[in-house]
Length: 83
Image (cartoon, rainbow, N blue to C red; front, side, top):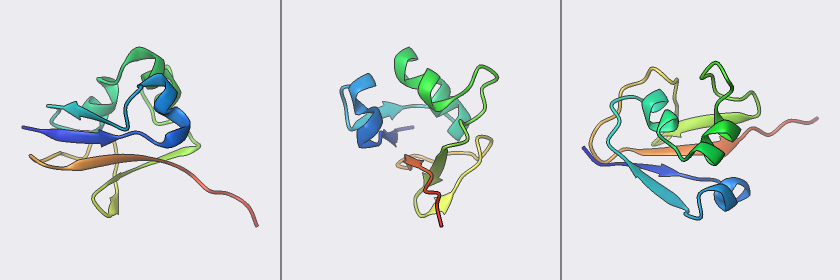
């Protein structure tokens, strides 16, 4: 199963890539498999998504437990705040 994980520009210095491949079955497993320097900026010590980030699969916001299918694109996006 081929999954792509798209890395936001602000974090690409930790992956040196815009996209990384994965064979993971869930969003959480795909993020857990990121290189250590990148993973620690995406997931906290408990394995939860950091509060300033969102994850999308295709055009829908995804939970870490959501299953992935062959060809899915997982996108890590910085959350926007303000008023």
